[in-house]
Image: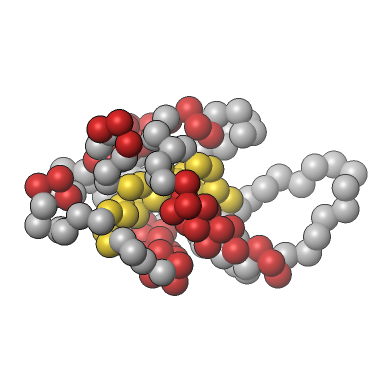
Length: 149
């Protein structure tokens, strides 16, 4: 039996806190998305995950370890994939200079930590629908039929 290509939308998660990244990945996977975790924002994180795999959207923390700025990560992602929808997650108040999202292009949405999985999905799905770049999954991954190996 030939391998069936995975057509689920791919979301790259740029989050240095493993527990937060796992929660985001689990929430997205349960909703039918394919996820790739890149703790430091390395743009090659999804290379080698299969030919032609390019993320459809991203969830990016603004404040990353080792002084990395999530805004720079968003800019680099959009150099690779112009117009990529990005949900920016942060514990910073929106008035903090480090939380300024101007100049990042769009579509971009802010989500303040702590957040629920439903809020994350709502923001991501809103960006995907508004951008028209990719359709959201048509059903939850748990509802998908299992494939024989």
